[in-house]
Image 1 (tube, one colour):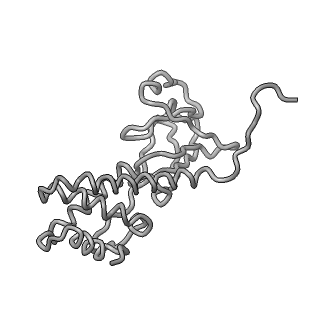
Image 2 (cartoon, rainbow, N blue to C red):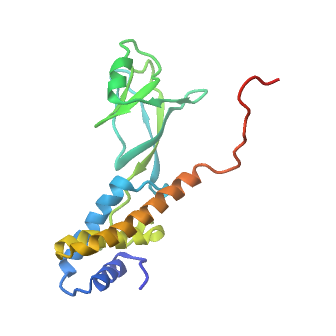
Image 3 (cartoon, rainbow, N blue to C red):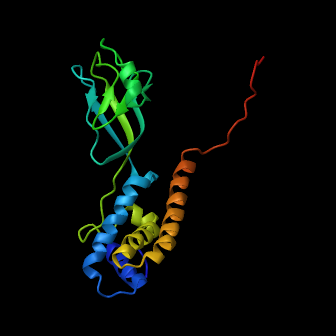
Amino acid sequence: MSLDNYNNLKAEIADWLDNDDLTSRIDTFIDLAEQHHKHNLRVREMIKRATASCSTTVRYLALPTGYRHMRNLRLMTTPVTRLQFVNEDEMTRQINSASGKPKWYTIHEEIEFDRVCDSEYSAEMIYYADVTALSSSNLTNPILTNYPALYLYGSLVAAEPFLDNDERIPTWKGLYEEYLSSANLSDKKSRHVGTLVSRPIGARP
């Protein structure tokens, strides 16, 4: 059976588990697989772009809906200003009481800049976001379309503890992690295309 939509995925999971009494539980297994995806999967199908204006009164900017991980945060100045991420301890050292163009940012429940903007800069965020979860009203999404094995094996990992079938967990978990690693690696490769040029170190004429 093709893993091309939510209904076929549920039928396939039931078939692999060889248990006809799990109809009401399979949705939960899929939900748990999606939680793993949210925390561990980083592929181009999850990349989104959002813009917002930096405030001239506070150092904070709201995170976009569905945010998972920032890839790039920049101010659309001339030339474009790419902001540098720092952890919260370093941000404490970098905070500047004078207003100006931010240089650094960190992320907690919001985006925090090192200073209040001296004008309303347009900020562009390139980030990983959650995809829409599968359901009876949303039969597919980019992850199921391009990485169906993650849904299958992730759901089987979630199912086996419920079935007290712990000996199968390492098998499904190993397969899930193999496909997860492959998917994440493909995203990294897609961001490093072209020929790398070797440059000599030291003085050049």
